[in-house]
Length: 141
Length: 138
Image (cartoon, rainbow over all chains, first blue to last red; front, side, top):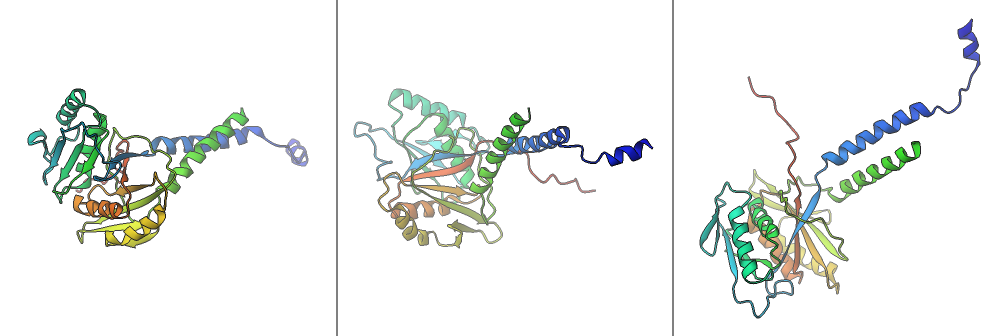
């Protein structure tokens, strides 16, 4: 009898509780998506012989960072990173030393061999960015 | 309460959809990771060049303005047209981490030929665990 009466009550109006539940579920979904998202950043360079690659006339020292096919990194002939070394801390320290001695506009030329994978070049650019090098360019091997 | 929830939900929705639109490509790319990279800056003019690597054929492939190109020199004229007289024009290179430097160098040479000296590499700020975790074979 009671059930029949409630059936006839009809429209119960807008229910806020299920609405909040739904919004909370959607929000958790979007928050999780944002947390798992990989943020795309950038590393910039200037091509040689153009406005970005122009160097200060007073700066005579330049630094050549060579990348071997196996991933070994040398700076002006000195080994600064083994193929397994992704962080390249030795290279960072050397670059910081040079920047303290001269300036952060000191030209750094990266010379990768032709078959070096792009990720290894990015490792070196990452180390240069960590050392706050401002003037980076590339050269063909 | 519900107002605050709606605002928060709209915020997270907008962030998610913007990122999806920016990185949509027809070729599969695995960008390299660089934790020391900087956040993307807004540029008055830029071109986006996607570079993929077909490992089976050991061949590089470029996706530029929704077209697939195999010869990097072909993009020079298009970049030159897009640049026009814009002084701070830049090229954003989104290259797969396995692409050999020689191919990326050809793309940079094409940019240089189009008089674009400001080049930026797209990278990921951090590495995530692999998407597909395979069960060990028995």
